[in-house]
Image (cartoon, rainbow, N blue to C red; front, side, top):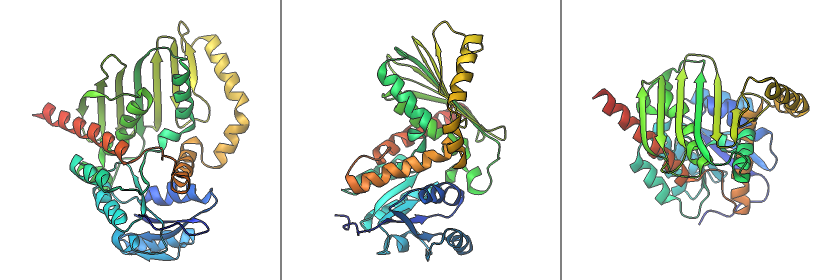
Length: 340
């Protein structure tokens, strides 16, 4: 049984003090009430102390196991390089803590299965913030309402300007375009279609990938990812009644295009402009917090905290994380077969 939660804010300890912790998760938590980041752990003690000073965090530990044993921590957020995710999460679960693991849950199915088996009655969340992105939530609602009719295709695209360095350039450590970018969209394949993809195929290299899959009797799935080019994060849903375009780095959208209407048509463009203008107050508020993409991390933490306090489900549990790992492993296998 996990320890009973104390009165007052939920106390979170972060394993890993890199970009995702310092620039995304800690600022997201700062927008919420009844939660507090109380501890950090990183083998780079200088980095840990710098982040601790920036966010007013008093407790700094040398490793995940020590942080997990800290009685001041209720939930451990594992945001270390991915090859250490399973180790950190297992330490937290063994200590009776609730756990959040940034994507990917693990880099192989054996480790992912071990994590799923170890959960018990703890809240165990996998970090797929796009599931609660405002536009993705709207797209799910449109699909549930049947607005698109039968879904025929899901096509996604993610490019990043920065070229990865350090562990982020090494797929063996959880870097590269597949584990850094594509795995988010592999999860969206399942989340938006509501079904299990099969027959994953991949071509490309560590920096540029094209992935496809199929769903028997369902939509075609396709994703392209690349680094070292302009930033874009987009999803297109094509159904028998029209298309829905999501641009996850923009403040407006989704853009709805009924069947028979060209994307560049004057009517479609005028309606899109009117919708964008009407949403300017909301866009301005979102922009003050860094935009909808960064706000998705706040929404993710709101849902995780509700899961801990109220027993609701997190946006993605460890089983969801394990299924995304399975798709990424299948893509890796396809790449190896292509080279062979």
